Length: 285
Ligand SMILES: [Fe+2]
Ligand SMILES: [Fe+2]
Image (cartoon, rainbow, N blue to C red):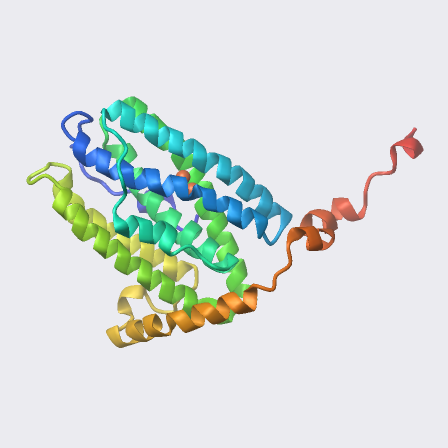
């Protein structure tokens, strides 16, 4: 990953969430994740439009993993003794409202940045919930999410190498994502019980999460200057031009053919071993 776990980790100190005393807050947190994991069904949409057989294979596996995460979140909520509930509108916007219309948007916004955010919060939850079974469930989901982020980063870098003109569109979408994060933060602050020993560090944790998000935006090459140094006027310009740029980007990239038309020139078939196949079984006898 462009940012290793060590850098994404945040220390809340020795205090932990108690599964019983903090069940309402934790239940709300996992309601957000439950929705996010259900949006894993989007893998099906992208599997149909995958640019390579390798990407299709990855998405098929990812779909199974995301659906298994749904079950794991339900198990966590059962352990907490809470019933699943609706997500906040900002989470719906981040997961569904911002669903990409092109492969570049999907791998950048959903996978590299979106799942990168999820991962940062998963690391924090795995370290702070005082329950071995819940910790084990989150750690097992982390193994999958790390692969999803890594794939998203690699595909985004390839996309930008091929289509550098899409950089501003993706940057504007990242700015929009940061705005939705702030919206969610303000709501989360209202949910936090006053004087909670873990959550008193929440504002610091939020700043850490945003700074790692910005660092990933920078490392993906979406901007030459750190996101926080982009002035208000430039941000506004990015956001105002976004609808038009997005429309142009989606129109230009929509002509891509499906794998059923392109598979003969796919990397899987033109790889060295495919070009020099082993002799037919009969001649080997
Ligand atoms: Fe997941
Ligand atoms: Fe994922």
